[in-house]
Length: 570
Image 1 (cartoon, one colour):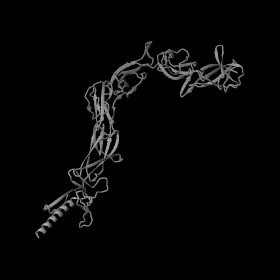
Image 2 (cartoon, rainbow, N blue to C red; image 1 turned 60 degrees about the vertical axis):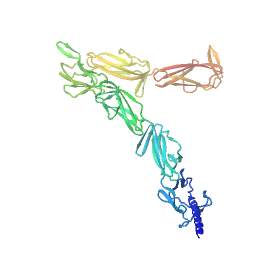
Image 3 (cartoon, rainbow, N blue to C red; image 1 turned 180 degrees about the horizontal axis):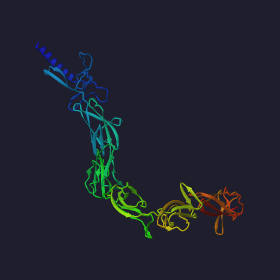
Image 4 (tube, rainbow, N blue to C red; image 1 turned 90 degrees about the vertical axis):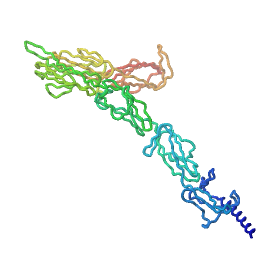
């Protein structure tokens, strides 16, 4: 009995040992994906994707072949685990006299991918990353359980690319950069999309001068404003004046603290990813000095038989000078009247007795001189306050083109005057670019182009009148052209001159052009015959004859030109 029991016990122990071997030979049925649902790491630890179907097999070989799938009390349904964490299969090992635990890790968590930027500068704003410089992207993913298998990325919704090495974004622009990772049991991370802007363009800034400005000159009441634009966002603008250090620009720079004189402002802007524009410079002048005003009351009088007479030419003359910006305007007030702008001498013939004068000047950047006053008593009997009337005329021919009178070089210019008072003394005229001359008789101008004449007429008590007129002078004659209807058949030499030879049937075409007044007429003469007006091609030439053709053209203003050609008809 004992022997039988002993044999049974040995058999049970052997059977129990066999069961242990068979139980350890567990097969997990993998998914058909390229990545299996289970994974065994280098330490022998087994991982299975949460939710995967697991089947148990028993066999008698360590390799697990020729095994049989176990059928549980739930039928042929596979095992599966939910949740994340360590799972254990146990069985009672009679040989060891204890339970044996088979560990299995159910992995439900995907990897986590991180992104790192290597660039000149990166900035995160409104779910967008702004980069500058080389723009290198490095990806890294961690999975504490089954471990990382692969990282993938795509650019602008393109194909998924397996991450092998850092990615370089070389071109400026907007990118949609998407990443995800997969662990060794197929857990896939949700795709994370990153909006990336590669910006290597610096800001563009400009300087505006506000207030009193004239060219590059400003007053002490002006300010300098710097504005900048950038595709991303301007981070900071810096400026310096003259040799000072660069300072952050916060608000317009007032010129009042600056000394009078020339200054240089330097500035540049930097965007949020540290793209800096080249330093810009501008030279300006601060003018704080108002003009100086000079006043004079002048006029000629004479006494005859104890009685004072005036030519009526007493006038107020005001002048101003400025150190830099230049005088913009002069204003004056006589005897408490409203200020008026001074643009030429003011005649005072209507004012008798005391004259109260106030005046001031303003330069081109608004600096205003302090009003001054002076009084002067003088007698102004009216005798003749009107200068001679001036008229001008042109002899023929003349034409009007685009509101401008055009004349030829032989046209005479006449200046006439009329004075109902003291009578004409003299008339001077000045052609622009030449010296002034005394007018004695009609004159001509033979210089091509627009001309301007300033006439000044004086009466016998020095009353003056001026007139300026503009006109054009055309001294260019028409250009004559000729064209043969046939090519020459040869050339002959007569009196040392090469003459083309044409066959019978030649037609000769004539033309003339004039760029200003236009061609008036075109005539020709064959072999000293009477001059004929050209209207149609010249033809019916006699054979065996040498012709001398004299061509003349005249424009509307009388400028003429000539051209002589010789040819022979076979």
